[in-house]
Image (cartoon, rainbow, N blue to C red; front, side, top):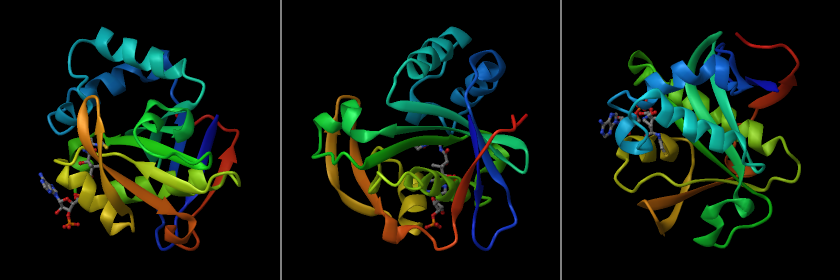
Length: 193
Ligand SMILES: CC(C)(COP(=O)(O)OP(=O)(O)OC[C@H]1O[C@@H](n2cnc3c(N)ncnc32)[C@H](O)[C@@H]1OP(=O)(O)O)[C@@H](O)C(=O)NCCC(=O)NCCS
């Protein structure tokens, strides 16, 4: 399963394929151990830590794990999910149309390049391409200034703090009106290397 985003005003191609454990585990393990990722994902450690986590995610019917590429180069891991079926729904009044995401930009040389914003725009377009989707939510740790600023710059509305088991999170919400006009997504059949 894969998809490709067309983002207004940029020539970059952002494309995603569903995570395949055999192919993608070493890549994701490396990213989980990067110093800019480890504090926020809490999965630093040997490869079996990442493997156990990814196997659990692949088994969850309401969630999809993705490897995201910019111009053919993998640069991010993301998860998209139906919020009403996620443990997050125990902590806020989830609508059946709510979709959510988690993400990380892996290679340190991609930080500060605008890649994260393209990634978030692509995820918003992907999630809201589903006619049943009404809003997109994200729940960064309240201390994750970098993520909070990135999302704010893309129109996320901070609806307040939710107390999750592992963190105090800012519940960020986008509606269709917040998506940049012209940002679209198409499903693709081709495997992306
Ligand atoms: C969060 C993440 C996607 C942001 O991508 P990025 O390329 O680092 O973001 P940017 O460089 O565009 O920076 C975003 C904002 O944070 C600021 N910023 C950059 N580094 C920072 C730091 N160390 N501390 C605080 N703010 C910082 C930038 O100045 C920018 O703010 P501005 O637009 O108001 O100037 C990326 O850092 C990442 O993957 N982090 C690890 C995983 C993670 O935190 N995921 C989110 C879990 S919900």
